[in-house]
Length: 249
Length: 377
Image 1 (cartoon, rainbow over the protein chains, first blue to last red):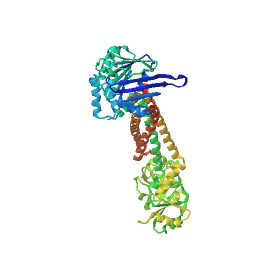
Image 2: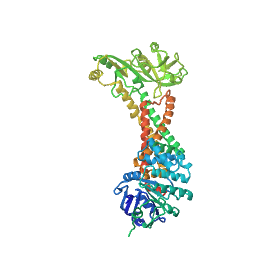
Image 3: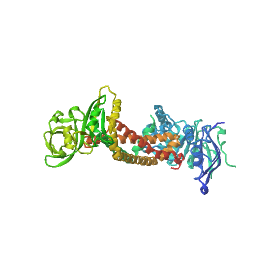
Image 4: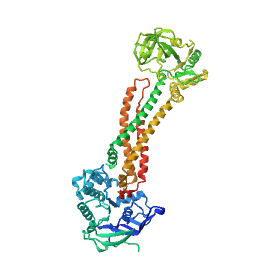
């Protein structure tokens, strides 16, 4: 059995205080195995982003446990959680979140710089990562000089340059046209072929379903279903699909 | 090389208008502090210029003398008592006082008479550009500074004027002996000084004592204190410090200069803090992204402090250039702004501290940043 890169068990998250209190997640359990591209789908307000934030160590759960790269997040402070993120997690955001004043190379290199890697080797690694996403010719371009699809590729390069075991993508195709969206998902699907790396994509875009190895559906803070997707990687073992998902009973 | 400097500098340059406003704020603040502190130093030097140019080991003065310009008088007997003390080789009288100078054209202006035995070198005029000390041995001659020519109605050596109804002739001209009170100094031999100030022949304002070569000044002073009553005996350094302290602090002038410097610092700190804070707010999304991709809080703090330091270095660089021009422009004025290497270094350190303090509000802001905000923006 493949060990999960991220594992969440019985996650409850309560947001707000007093009368405005909302239970965003209700005993959600989810594990993400290496070599898989998992789609987390659900309507707006279903808890997708909250779950993503907790899996990415940006939010702490009200109760339940999260293990990232085999390490529990329980009792960890903001600095320890940041350390877990930089060592194990790569993020891709809907609106890219690139630094407008930095070149593509420097945007990617930032993920290494925050880890203390700032030698010339870091520049080479960043350029290699850009080459991997098909932007070898745009290393010196600033974000304003890149199309939306290219900017998202830079963001993907930033997410993978540090060899993160988990890539968490929040609506990575939402701001792109279908052609660019398809290209981005193809890229993420390629990345997910690496058995040491798991990719979780939060989306409500049904067009990307064919890229998924697994589809997890969430509604009203609960996981309501997990199914095998139409993933193209085609090398998953049976026991790596769907067995880590739990819904409240 | 780390990206911290790149990110910090580009964050600043990204908003040029705000960057320029910040630098201008720092420049004005540092210039204000430079001028105030330069005036403080200049004032401090000017109020002790006579003491600095004297050649004495010990100053004998009436008890309670606050500064060089204090016109209390000593009796000539004190001089002889001092000379009788083992180790004292000379006790040179100095007479000072205000007098009325009548210009050749009939106007009048107050002057400050400084009289001594010019051959003894106790307190002669310095920086002579015309005439000599020997020329002052001719009866009724004086030395004046060229910066007061207009005030005194003098056009050089040979000009005739009147002091206290007595004709005087300018026999020597100095350059750069200016008075912080703006009252011109007039140097003259001791007997003429007594005549111009109405001082009795057996009186003097100070006795400047020299001790024998190899003698211990402190021991000589102890013996003087034991034998001379109603006088104070100070070393040159002590009298300089007393005069400076009186003019700078007892009169409140120094506090006013310090207050101006403090105001400049506060204004600068507020300007930099305000612009750094608003810059940080504008880049909050980027700082949240940094946090999201795993940067430590310290990494972000370094970016902000680096921004503050870039502001400091550029602001100080420009302020130092402008300050240098101001120092040069005031060098020949009645109250020059003095810049020393110590003050320059101190101002740079002050600029850096000011900018780092200014970064605190921005740092507090990013410390509270929620990395999860990247999902909602």
